[in-house]
Image (cartoon, rainbow, N blue to C red; front, side):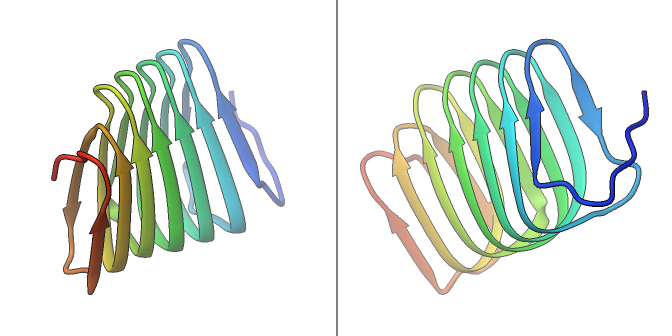
Amino acid sequence: MYVYYSQISKINASGNVTIGSENRIDAQRLTIYASGSAFVSLELKVNNLKADLNGQARVSVRGNCTREVITADGLSKFYGYDLYCMDAVCWGEMDAEIRVHVYRELRTNGHYNIHYIGNPASVDGINSSRY
């Protein structure tokens, strides 16, 4: 199924669904909700990205953003090595895994696996996030 749009600000993927983009999504703000065993793969150019993952959801993003806020729990995975971002705020629980590419500021909180590339000027880890 193809969906055409002129503006998009929210994507909600739940259950056993796959959502992908053929072209880059340009937006001021984009929110992604992924749950169950959903898989989302997008090319982005956004100022503010918010992603909320749970269950066994997987989100893979590439492109550019200014600020991203990622929340993950359960066995969910956020793959963001190919999304070049200035600032990232990540929060996770359980066996969630978050991978980001950040080059200015990274803030983390929770009990989960965080992996980052880039050379952020500031890294602030709270609780027992594992780098």
